[in-house]
Image (cartoon, rainbow over all chains, first blue to last red; front, side, top):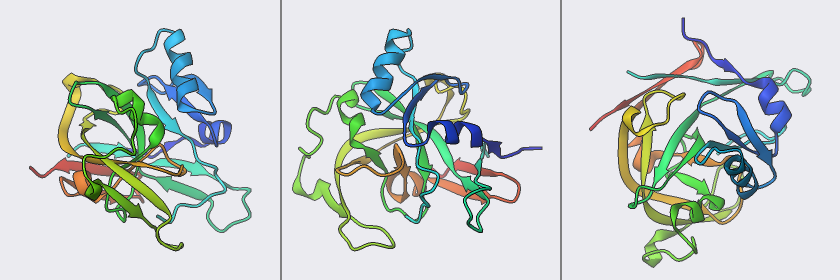
Length: 63
Length: 158
């Protein structure tokens, strides 16, 4: 059975931040800007991580 | 048809009637003509007409000034439901949207489809790194949402 992915803990921890992730969801770096997280990821030897800006959970999307 | 999980986020203490958010996040590649690619977790928005990115990504795609578009037509006022338009400005550039078969292997040998399109960089920050809308994405793929069962499916149409 295919299930939704519960990412509650991740979103709570990193809300309002940028994060860099490995393809299998491990957090490489987190910070206030994309530049910061990419720079830190590079310093850890990861050149092209998955990147995401995590929204404030109190904000609802109605786009 | 490739299947992807909805991202589920519990918000039990928010005091609102909504206790669980179901969010269609999809990790994609955005590639320039020289093959440079950024990997971005994007929010699929069936109501958005365009694919948009946070402007922080521009320089990693070789775009030094994202506001410098090829023509005036590539700069658009962007508005959304719930606000006065224009709320934002999108600066569109020729890029490639890369959709992967497997969200845990964003590699070139795992591409479902790559679409040459225009992607806009937003002047003002929004609560997402990227938004996947109609032009370049939903007009190239079937998108089937099955929220009760926790997944969505995407299939290339061309």
